[in-house]
Image 1 (cartoon, each protein chain N blue to C red):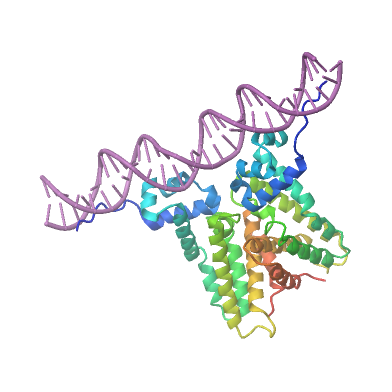
Image 2: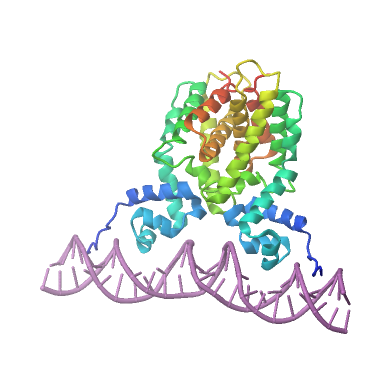
Length: 188
Length: 188
DNA sequence: TTCTTTCTATACCGTTCGGTATGTAAGTGA
DNA sequence: TCACTTACATACCGAACGGTATAGAAAGAA
């Protein structure tokens, strides 16, 4: 059977551009024209390749998790609970203030109020929190009586608060100063 | 000079309804129809009374700060730095999970990505942070070497992270458990 | 009552939204 | 070379957006 004309753009490269637009403008704030302009393709190509705006967003979030949140998986591989948390919060502070990326993080900037995008992002954040709680529960170096789920939630709260601050323009040193204080609450 | 027909609604009551809509749906997510329906007025009355959507939002944020963030001013009046912080974070956790109000806080739900609403909210949050930093700088019970601005930023990070969590459905006990941990980082 | 002023109601404005129909260009397999 | 399949480009769709023109209704002052 004939193959047909091949696609004239790279789907992953175009997705990377979409990530940036959603990151900077949020799900609702990113119009199809904004997206397709940045992706260098036109509307029907986007619909053919990704489905619709919401599916494009989900793909963008998955790509973001794979690329821009790789540091989180590295942090989970640290040997002690304290090292996991410190590494996560430090790398998070750096990721929130990369000069070649929008400030803050896609999960927060994408949208918090109403809509399916907000629900999807909230669920994925809580999944990350659960993964951290699992890792902390498996650590053998936490003091007896430490609640791994509560500690994981605290760490995520700090990272989300830092994301809000980064989006408001607080610089890298400011975020790390917050991490300095936050780490004092972590048992070791 | 003649007075003209008096307004048929109470401007503050209508504003309270607008606060709820913005809180639940965000600035962009709240359409004029959503707003005027909830306020019980029609479009021209809204424009005559408040100016336009953005000015209505600013009035709503001011009203929110006056009513729903009164706890913050009470917290600043506590006698010691530690008491100020503990009271603020506890009352914040309660405010984020009131059953008669949307979950989370208007300042975060209103919008974080792009647009003048996000900038306005970010500036008002930083103003609150500055007020807390001022109060902490005036405290005489903080250990020498404590940076009041950094500590204030940490406290705001925790409150913002908790707001994100509350919007994602975490309950009051969960937020207070985070505050339990967060307070361990506060010098006393 | 009459005049003046302001509020209210309806209907509408141009623009932008997410999404799609349609015709044409560009490749592959026979 | 020809048939076939798929991608691309343009132009368009109905709906919803923020905002407003216009006309009628209601109150106080004279």
